[in-house]
Amino acid sequence: MMKPWTSLTIPAKAEYIDIVRLTLSGLAAKEGFSYEEIEDMKVAVTEACSNVVLHAYNGGEFGVIEVIFEAEKDSFQIRVKDSGNSFHYEPTVIAQASLHEKPLIDANVGGLGLFLMQALMDQVEVHSELGTEVILTKRLGRKEEMA
Image (cartoon, rainbow, N blue to C red; front, side):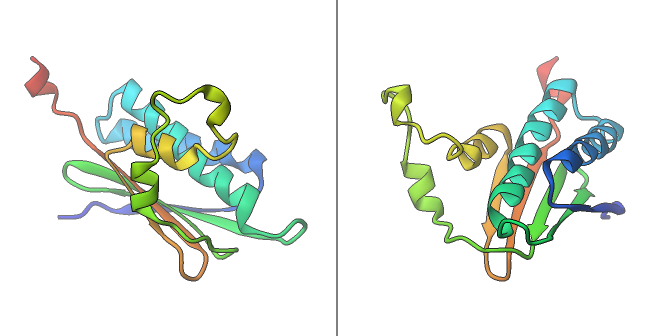
């Protein structure tokens, strides 16, 4: 049985991302996620929202970010959607492009958002047709397995 979902619609401006982070913290804590898991999710959702702020809408064009939080039995999903400029996403290219054994100078500033999201979340999906939707999924850690 799916639990109720929560959604926010905020202006695509950096100063509103804290509202998303605070909402995520409260909802994920209610679902039993650890402090570390919540912090990982907050960094990932910040990256997704920052990408919208930086890339989705042209300069002075007004835009919004829609964020949907959905709790399942054993996972938590965050959908970050915009209706701005789409981009061509190739998951195989991202998965194959590793920064291991490369000097830091070779890393593109601002180009690590998807890598970071993939490192912090259990699953990351990107759909870019009419705007872009990033779906971040974190599975609930099994505390009894750790004991």
